[in-house]
Length: 217
Image (tube, rainbow, N blue to C red; front, side):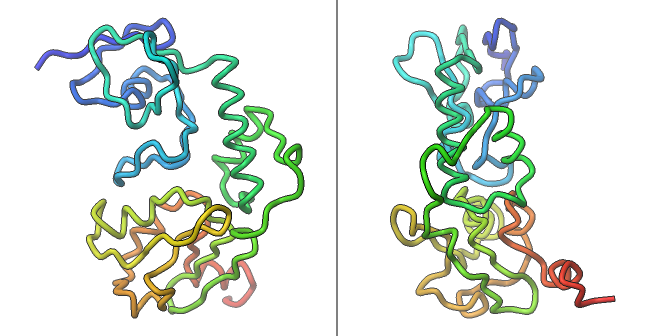
């Protein structure tokens, strides 16, 4: 099947049929920020950080969930997009402890984000206590910004177990298990796929945490 010609930031890109705008941009070395996207999971368009402008469309589209089309003209950087991304990043940082996410803190600096301009950090996710209900890893959900990668990895994205769930609303919304059961009782097989895709440090191996706390020699 022939390739799909698209223009991204003035560059002609020969994309594979079925590629997303994000995939096409990355193939050309064009960086688009994203928080929720991961190649092995099915999350699409949740974080809105990868919004791009497409000629002829009334509003920005998420690059990770928009399929390329012949003749598509894409702009990944503009003043409007910078303002949108700055706001998304600020609200994430306002609700979440992002200190362990080097990627996100890098984007905060790149977009000159100032979460404090929205007031005091929100409660909810920031006040969630660490959960130590198994011998393998700790769930530090104050660091979780609900990208849902772990849910996808646990569910149809990789493992097919569905031990994790999503509950709550607004600032109280977050990843958990059904009925807040301990992981083992929720069906977790401790495969570690959720740890592999978590970008924030919300899922920490017990041994790693023990070393950081000086518990192992």
